[in-house]
Length: 295
Image (cartoon, rainbow, N blue to C red; front, side, top):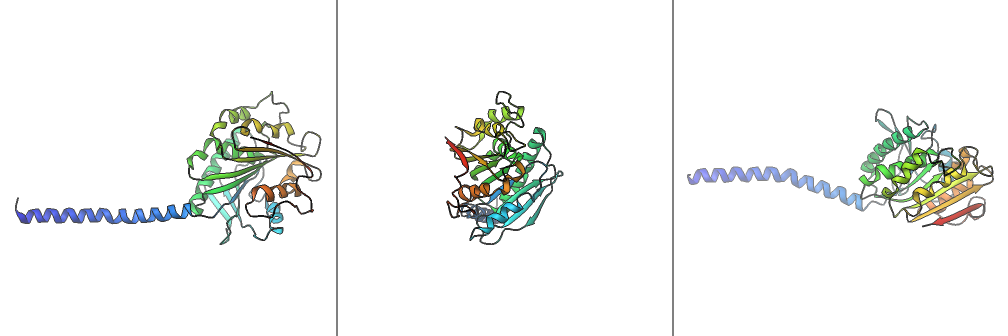
């Protein structure tokens, strides 16, 4: 092989290496930038899921009440997942709002265990899209009624895909973990599945399960015993599990998300940077509550 031919081969090889290195350099630079944005993110959204037959507008009154009594107003972003997989957005997250409220609703908002599993899968699609778009590394979850069931299925079936994202706290409100059964001896298929898969739920999670009792034993739709069945899923699996019973005015099932005591609980236990201790009636939120904290 002549020296000239050797030089040509070396030159071509060098050019080839450079051509490979250039896209690798920009890919690495872009990847590092994304990782820095993720790890340095101050965003900690509150992601809410409504119950069956409800839409992404379900928590409008709740958000209004939260924003009436805080210096730092929460942005409201509404997300809808359609049956064909399309995701639409309404509203926006305001610049410098580190704790926006995101509500995820579904075209399929029907009741029933099979639909809850479909909705959990749809919520996973929305969650992945939101995390990619906003790059938050932690969040808080609130689910009303079947929204709490969707959250439970999501935590058990999908959340391990997000190993670097933390769910700090979860509050379920009037969630029928055993549907309309009044006895834990009669476990529904859903409750049995949730109990069987409970070890997939993050152990560093704090969970609040809120029940309403307008009558002695129910909120006129969900039996208190069905809400209480959540302890068989979360208790001794998560860091803290707390059961709270709200009584008195507006403790009926559909009224719970805008119930003043529930709003106070959210302010006190779910939000990161709020004044503690007093609700809009000037009372301590514990005055009308029954509470158990079980580890």
